[in-house]
Each structure stands twice: as structure tokens, then as C-alpha cells.
Length: 407
Ligand SMILES: Cc1ncc(COP(=O)(O)O)c(C=O)c1O
Image 1 (cartoon, rainbow, N blue to C red):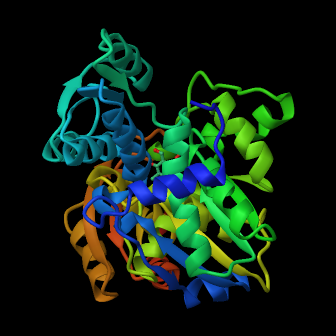
Image 2 (cartoon, rainbow, N blue to C red; image 1 turned 180 degrees about the horizontal axis):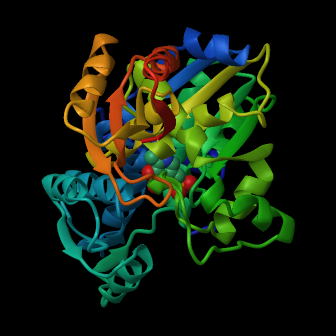
Image 3 (cartoon, rainbow, N blue to C red; image 1 turned 180 degrees about the vertical axis):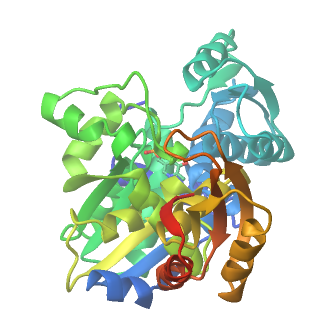
């Protein structure tokens, strides 16, 4: 197989994927909330609504259907902690061959269950993704078994590129914004956009704690990170490949990075304003639109929401972070005389302002306290920063010393 990808390959992939039960055409919707926040005219490609919750079935099906057509392969193997696992599982089941997916032992149970639910055999091996990958490669012992890489494969890239065709057909954008992990997604989309809308700017987005593309482009070779640190696990690959780096170099105009704080805010904004549940990697495009580093004022923009598999533990983390940020959850440390009734008095004061107490505890062993004094630490819920200030002022007005810290 030719080791690069052309628009012809992407068109051929689209023909193979012409089955709504494998890949559906996901909608493009306008977002007036994001218009206001960016000064642009923003649309969202809702690929998080794809079967399996991400675009990954596109590449996997394109790859596996060619293996099946060749006639020698009876089984595929892949390593993944998330979306690629589900994409390969569904594609293999649809094409009638066995799939074994190796996941790290700590993979969230919901993702393991979903992958099994799509018909794959799951092996839980290794502490991290690399260990799972080494084990998966070891399972390829004969010609009847093929390894399906998550991004370093022209067939995977071409399959992801079918999204680029849809994006060009459904939106006449000045700029498209696409998250980058291993680079398969943006390589495919870039290949399609360069052909169909050569004037359109293609912007890639990486999580700051897993950003490898800027350095790799500078050095002219893939740079890998020993460890990655981001809540956006879908784009935490820690490296691109020679194939994807060369396609990024050819088709992508700009690559920017976003922090986990920006990603968290984007996840929340999409939930609150657009009513969409999108995982961190999927929301990175919107995080980029909201960041200082990308100016889309006056432009028509299409941001790709590429995944919706936000697990519940991550959702809780995102919510607590955001609520704390907005002072809808906060901790108040109040210095009291340690005698009966003080806690009741303060609790009533807080309740009088309709703030809800989540937890309360006494701190007595604090060096700065005089004998007979204590701190009461309340974790409370408010409706926002203004409400929080009213509660604090009222406690102060009743003669207490109070400080405020993040919960
Ligand atoms: C939701 C989501 N977005 C983006 C990506 C990045 O894709 P790629 O690794 O092809 O760059 C992934 C990869 O797993 C993903 O799951």
C-alpha cells in the first residue's frame, strides 16, 4: 500500500462507508452562544453523536473492510483505552470477523463494557497504554491476524478523512478546528479540505499536557513524550507518526494548544448552552475558539466535536472544577469560640441566605487559635459569586472572622 494518503483514498473510503448502520451522517448546527463569545459565526459538527460516540468507526471500518476483501485476515487486534476500541469492535462485528482489544487494566469499566457490547473480546493487560500496545502486537502471530493501529495507517487516515468531505459539503467555512492526538483525524480531514475547499484554514488543537506537534514540526520528525498529563484522554497519545506528521505539515495551517482549564470550561459550556455532552478531547476545538490564541472574529467557523464518551468520574471532576471556579461551591473558615450553640447560630445564618451546607467540620488543632477557640469549616453551595459574597458579608457583620477558600 502506498504510504501516503490522497483525496482519492478518502473518496474510496466514503464509498466503503456508505452504510448508515456503520457510520451515520452527523449534523452540523449553528451556535449563537459561541458567536457571541468569539465574534465569529460558529457551527459545530456533531460527530460525538456518531454510533460508538466518536469518529473512530470511520477509520476502523475502512481498514478492516480492505483486510476482509483481501481474504487472508480472520481476526483483528487493537490496543486502546477508549474510542478506537469501540470503533474497531463495531467495524469488525459488522464485517463478520473477530476482534480482540487490549485495554490497560485501569480502563474505565463503562468503556470495557461498551467495547464488549459491540462484540469484541477484551483483554485487560498492563498498567498503561504502552504495555497494552506491546501485548496487542504480540498477539499477531500469523497472517490470519492483523493489527489495527489507531492512527499510523493510511487506511485509518483515509477513513477519518470522510468527516472532512461532510464538513466541506455541509458548511462553507473560513476556518475548521480539529483536535489532534496521534494525528490520524486531522490528517484525513486536512487531505479532504485541501482538495474541496483549499482556501479554508485548517487549525489543529492539542492539549498542553500532551502537545507534540509543534515540537515535531520544528524538528521535522515525530517527537514523543514520556508522560502525558491532560483530562482529554482521547488526545493524550503522546506522539504522532511519520505518516501523520507529514500530512499535518502539508495540510494544516496552524496548531495551537489549550490548557485543561480551558477544556473543562468548554465541556461545561457545551453542556449548558448547546445541551451537548462532549468529552474533553471532543471539546478541545471549542476550547481553542475561546482561547486567546485563536482569532476567528468575523469568520465562519466549523468546530469539530469529535467524541462524546465522557465517563461519569470525569464528568464529576469537570463539574466540581467548574462549580468551584464560579463559587457555586466554596469553603468558608469561620473562627469561633468553642462553645455549644455556635455551630447552630452560623448554620442558621447561612440558611437564612438560602445557601446550602454540604459539609461542616471543626478544626481545633490549629496553632494560631487561642485556648477555647476553634475553626468551623463549612462547604456550601451558592447560586454564584454574588450570592457567595452576600453570605460572607453577613457572617462578618455578625462579628465573625471568616476566610474563603476553594472547595
Ligand atoms: C474524541 C477524540 N478526539 C480526537 C482524537 C484524536 O484523533 P487522532 O489520534 O487521530 O489525532 C481521538 C483519538 O482517540 C478521540 O478519541
